[in-house]
Image (cartoon, rainbow, N blue to C red):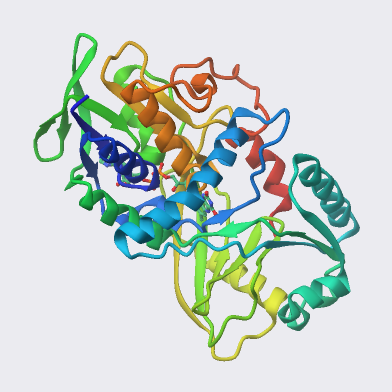
Length: 394
Ligand SMILES: Cc1cc2nc3c(=O)[nH]c(=O)nc-3n(C[C@H](O)[C@H](O)[C@H](O)COP(=O)(O)OP(=O)(O)OC[C@H]3O[C@@H](n4cnc5c(N)ncnc54)[C@H](O)[C@@H]3O)c2cc1C
């Protein structure tokens, strides 16, 4: 393979571009907007612990491998570009404010320990000792206990994307703004893409267009359910950092950046391709901050945004060659873990594209694998996750 065109300039497309360019492939990245328009930019950048353990599912194996790769990439990217992507093993504190919540935390802690992760259960006073700022929250009296996952990490998506783009450019990757509308296929080969302004030819094609991949893959007869699931975030600027761990309560979380910024998330909304924030949600997220940290004099709401997570039908992203086509590949459907799984996804697909033995069995990610029967929702799928967690929203 000497030249490759990747449709998609989010974390999945850029990570693959970097990996392929590092292997000597001439890479072009086509994207509709700039980095800040991607779901990847909008993400929180939380990496839960990802230990390798017996009986691990293919999806978790991809996360575990990616987690290891992130530590290496982070160092390499900084050496290569001078950009620190903010990868930080800050730990994550998960709170319970009901007896049922406490029960769930106990079960979660047992599950994490069985997988080999460090999970400490805390009583309320230990929670306050761990993060004293929580004592100021309106709901401080409601915190019944917590679980500390010491290996939980955070990464700053915008900086990571900047570092990837800079690394790609150093490796000769060419970036082009283009809105791909369809593809022209001749026999078993994709010949060219038709964009809003013209046509582009390439020897090899990769679809890495996040939630929009399903629509593009339809041109190849590939059924791909990358249903967009909206997530909203509010960013506050505090005079100084107040917490050190990521604070999780149900589906809500606070991520403290060392420069004082505090990211508050999020939502899981099945509302189609609508990337806007809603006043109700922004108000609710600010209420989460107040209930956890109290009134914050001197803090300002810097901005709010929403992103569209690319869903999947069976819990696994789709990574590999598109059936019946010799020169077209896909990497999409990473739902809530696209940042975390980006490194492993890039190396896995680059291995498949360049004929190297893959580190993971790619079967569970193969495009065209049998989809779950209609009406069923396998564990870990987007639909299952939405159904299970709807009630847990704050
Ligand atoms: C609020 C929120 C919080 C999140 N938090 C986390 C987290 O803590 N940890 C984590 O691991 N993940 C998180 N995620 C999930 C993660 O953001 C996604 O899984 C990931 O960003 C998907 O990356 P992607 O590259 O596939 O898609 P995107 O980032 O959406 O990129 C898609 C790219 O395709 C381009 N494109 C689309 N259609 C076309 C077209 N027709 N022609 C040309 N270009 C096109 C777009 O312009 C864009 O460049 C979060 C997501 C949200 C919304």
